[in-house]
Length: 427
Image (cartoon, rainbow, N blue to C red; front, side, top):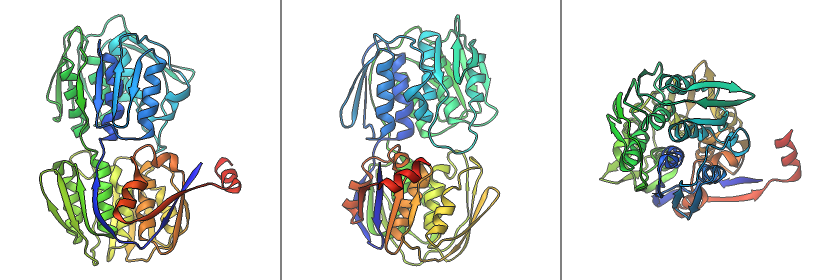
């Protein structure tokens, strides 16, 4: 196992290319199960979740060809192989296999998913949708069993806005008989991306990106080629890094509309941002003002950017308050930031940050993917060297992180954990 070493204090300058969206990729790959012929997905991010999902498709009989940024899926020989254990438990997004396999085979057995531990993220809305379509759903020995004689369209109202449930119900409904209407649907760009793939395969979907999605079931879906949208969370993370340590940084291959809420908050802090069609130029300012943020469902401020943004706020004058309305366990990075000298405390669902403070390099651990991003931001800001363990979380969501940061002028490298450090991780 590796640790990430960052020597702080080096300004960033240059251009960084944003990869394809992680949160699209992890839904698009399972969606390929629904086709009857070859599906090609390109602009894939080079992250561990993509490799895991490719291996899972092979477990159920598919043939998968994965190159640097492209996956070709041959679904013709796939079967409804149960996946109760193993790789399926390593990533949260494995739950999309439920909707895709239910839609294709009318049955599935999927182990309860893993991924980042962000407190309770129940899949009750997914199950509610599957049951409305006619599936019988049971939890047996830590796995979800789904069975249906046939799937029929239904009107489904989501009690909470859920990206995962919206996509999963779409996957299950595209081949159901009749019309399915999803009300109070999530509006994230990744949902539009999945709907675009499914439509290219022959599905009939209207309203993706609004709070009401209508799906008219079809009998079969064909293969297609699809290019993933840029990752708005990766783009936002590099925007925060540029605001923290950049002199002139260009964020390339992005859709600025997808990060409007972050642009607004950075400008409120005093960061200079120039926006063009598919890129941003960030001119850093040394004096930044504290701001308050509240995470909300899209198009509000993303919960996935709350943690790295908190690190940036340690460098802003005055008091800032960060409130996360999405996940109640998303402040595990705060203890690590305090270890580096940040003046931060947590009260309920809010973190209160008093700035400006000079951070100091320290040994810290990433407890989840975006906490890892927060520690990378903090490491670049800190005096001395920061050691970040828990890299398996960061590798799930950020493609070629070191190469991209080195290209901007950061001093960052990997080292093997010592035996003593490995014992601490395993204890």
